[in-house]
Every structure is written in structure tokens, then in C-alpha cells.
Length: 230
Ligand code: BEZ
Image (cartoon, rainbow, N blue to C red; front, side, top):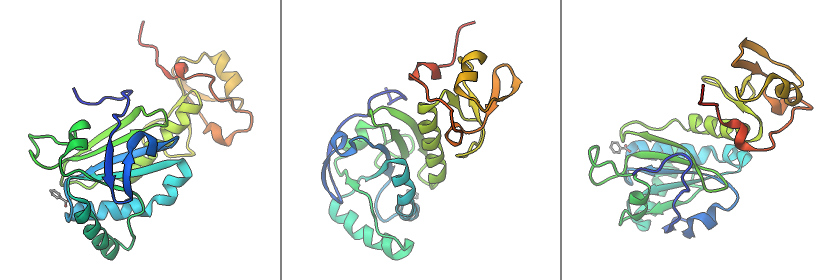
């Protein structure tokens, strides 16, 4: 069965462009974006790796580490890295896993044989500091990923972990958020002193609580769960 949200991200050891890593130990207390590339010296991947290197300050702000994977050798990764620097204007500043035996690719279900029997599709796993998988996205080999979208979801996850909120369609950091339906109006009034706009009893919009003095963080994550009964 494929890895699902809430599963513990499988641990592995691997050789990377920055040396050997034991995945869980390397991740430490940070969030991780683990993403696969079909193979080295491919054009779409070259643009993606340059872009991820460019996003490093954004990752750092959020306590996120990037970890790429491509099913080629370390020696090949090193030669490719110089093409990435030359064409994208930035050197790799995060590790790229060598996975010639496809050990990690198989562990994470990165090879979709009906799409390509040999090479990985473009998978993305966002993994939280407790090593839980919080987001998975799979793109075909021909479509470069939107890493702004991945960062947007990290922003949403980090916000909703802290406050009893969810984020609406196309939300961007700083915009209004939704108070989770499981929180009563009485409890919401204590948590969100800024108040809210109720379009429906279950659709209450409030300013991003990080910008509000006096907004209270949730004591537990249990509140994030939407009621499914009734
Ligand atoms: C690429 O990264 O450019 C690519 C890889 C596999 C198939 C098509 C494109």
C-alpha cells in the first residue's frame, strides 16, 4: 500500500552529495521536503533543482530542509550539479540522494511502473518534525513542480498546527483563515479576540492569528479534526 498522510516517513540511510545520511537523524527537529527526480541530466529536473536552491532562504525561515533524490550515482550527481550551477545560476545547497539500486525510490513508492518502469515520477513528501507525512503530491515526469505551492502548504500546515484554523482556497500566508467548525462560538471568542465574519455558522473567517495580539494557540491538535458524525 502506498504511503499515506499521517504515516511515519520510513527511515533510510543513503549516500548524498553532502555525504552519508541517516534520514531521521539528518531531519532532526526540522520539516523536510523530500522530492524525487526521474534521472540526472534531464531538462525539467535541472530547472527544478536550481529553483529549489533559490528558495533556500524561504526554507530556512520555516525550518524546512530540502532533500532531492535521483536514481543515478553520486559521481553523476556531482557532474550534473555543475550544469545546474551553470544554467540556473545557483549551486546545489541541499543534498541529492544517490539511489542507483532504487532502494529509497521503492521504499517511498516513487516508481509508478505504468508511467515508467525504470525511473521515478516527480513525488513530493512534506514530513513534519515528528516524522509524519503531512503532504504528498505526485506529478508526471514532463511537468515541473510548483515549489511555491509546496511552500504555501507548509505555511498552512505550520499555521494550522498552532491555531484552531484551516485555510481556504488559494490561501496565502497573511490572508484570512477559517475557524475550524469543531470550535464552538464561545471557545472561538476566547481564542480569536479579533472576532470573525460568519458567512454560515460553519464558515467563519478571521484574520491570520499570527498577526493578532492576544490570539491563543490551541492546546492540542485534537481540535483540528472536523466532526464527521451527524
Ligand atoms: C525532465 O526532467 O526533463 C524529464 C524527465 C523525464 C521525462 C521527461 C522530461
